[in-house]
Length: 66
Image (cartoon, rainbow, N blue to C red):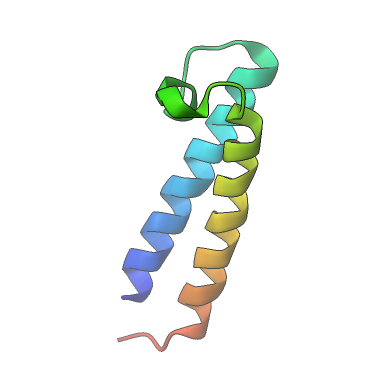
């Protein structure tokens, strides 16, 4: 379970980071800008993904390994 939470946290961190990178550099990477209902809210969604990633990392750290 701990490894799954870490993996999900890593994926959320990467997607949040690439979403912010897309917004500020206009590179065509990441999934956040491809989701239609988030039009205009991509920065907020990317920041929310980064916050979610840190919450998942904290949850994984609080779990016992095993």
